[in-house]
Length: 410
Image (cartoon, rainbow, N blue to C red; front, side, top):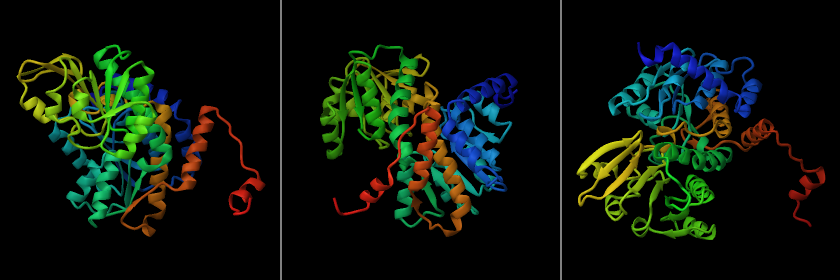
């Protein structure tokens, strides 16, 4: 019996779905408000997301709004099999943990073969595959993460973007919370589950000081680590310095660091020559979407030996006999070694995905083939729904204050 048809896994997936749903009030509240009349009825939505308990709530919301969902995983090692089994009762699913690169590409191709009318993606692998295969009939889509938006912007700049895309990642109600608080907590969740080591007193090097890097740095310091930030952007480097972190380049940081965490969305930010400078026992982990931030390919090709010493931890012996440890094979640690972001964070990210799907359905005929941001009105609606779910109330501006904000007079 395949995993996806295993009734025990399906039952476990349902339990995890219900747990996540109970902590994602912003998404479920907006879904109840906007799903009347089944606004996505007749729409086939191709989805490529990390198949987690939080994703199961989004899929449930899309189906509740009338959509026909076709789902693939956004990473070969991030799918939670119990969730895939549960979602197979609601959608067509091509996802399982431990896919080979060929199986991963095959799963994405299956989503495109059923001719979706809209796409929801995380990392833009589905969007890029749609462009390479010249899949027809796609009205538009959305994108969840920084790396994916970068790829779509590149398509747009070359005049090759085939349909409008809403950059959900660029919404304040996404990156200010998902990237910072979600990545900050869940990255260490993954690293601690994999290594079971003490962070207090450890010399942690965070490569990249974007929103994800800020979250990782903040959590590392909060756990008692001595934190160094590596940056190439001078503005971000100044910010990290004024936030109280030591700032340097990767080659200097390599000499002293014990735990290295990449969070850039860029290729080769921990090159092989920096790894060779690291101390015995250095740990390498990645918080970015793809497995290209650490030069894993060169590291493994030149290794004297590689062996798994704990689940999701490989001991790599480099020429000369020094040992370094690679978490999650250089893939995104919070999803390979843990469960990804907490539901309280994902309620906002996925509320934006849901609102983007409704926007594409309603307005795609008037939209150009470009990358769009989330509207200010939608940001406010998502934020207010999140506050309500968290039991937080805020005040409102008076009429006099609103008038003053629009006046040039004191």
